[in-house]
Length: 334
Ligand SMILES: Cc1cc2nc3c(=O)[nH]c(=O)nc-3n(C[C@H](O)[C@H](O)[C@H](O)COP(=O)(O)O)c2cc1C
Image (tube, rainbow, N blue to C red):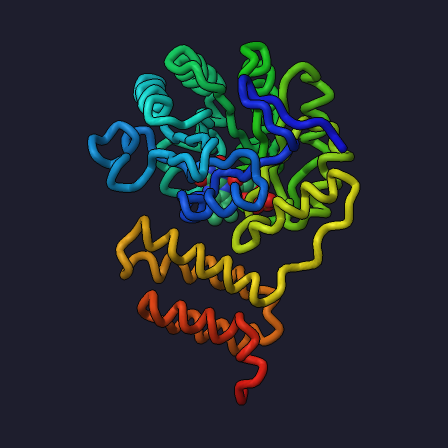
């Protein structure tokens, strides 16, 4: 079994955690991850100004609760002062770590000079990191991509950022092995991530990219030389991935895939937790995004999915889940 993962004062017993996933990794998804053995989760990215907005934290249910802890918060912004203030507020409300986003490729984020756009500004990244680190006592992670694009200037900038940051020893550098320009296309460059670890051996480096199955996770942990990995899309509608990663890393065979009934039970639980966070008219469409993923392995997906998607109320969603995931659907006329 490989070692766990130490991020500042956080001692994870396994070298993986759930990555920030904007629009997904709210409290409901984080609680499920925790239940299935994930040792640490993160919020989706929060704009620094949102964290500073009075009442927004409470209204958006952003503060962590014991059932999901430990949870880290990820923040986005270009101003060192507001980033530091936001980090301090987030530490105060109970987040166990702060992750700084210099990776987001969304055009509206880039246009405002935030997220991945900052990879062209190594000094600003450093300044934000230093201000945040001085403002909090929880671990500070820095999330990067491997450059703005794949041109030589961008690659050089990436190495400069790694060098400057590594000399400051952040608690972890988390690197998504794609350029900003690639968004989510192509394959993540794990060879390059391995090279980062070889160059900065004393720095905790966490890799991200294309970790869709427990086998992907175990392979990268065993072969990349990195300290740990962050599981992202592979966990959407699939909290079992954490249980299975634990088994694989312990040298055991993963448990058999969940039965339809088990998937249905988890979907019902997930829906209830989402309903605790949002009004029904928002919770139902929000849940649809997960339903599509939960249904991926359904033997009659083509029939089940439209039914789940057509449900307009929470009760209709529950009925569709019970219908398609408790075995009865097999007896129903197609
Ligand atoms: C829907 C979605 C939302 C994401 N939101 C965030 C985010 O808020 N912050 C962040 O740093 N990365 C975010 N990411 C990137 C992931 O954390 C991860 O780095 C990336 O998806 C690569 O891993 P994967 O290929 O295993 O999914 C997001 C990715 C997706 C697909």
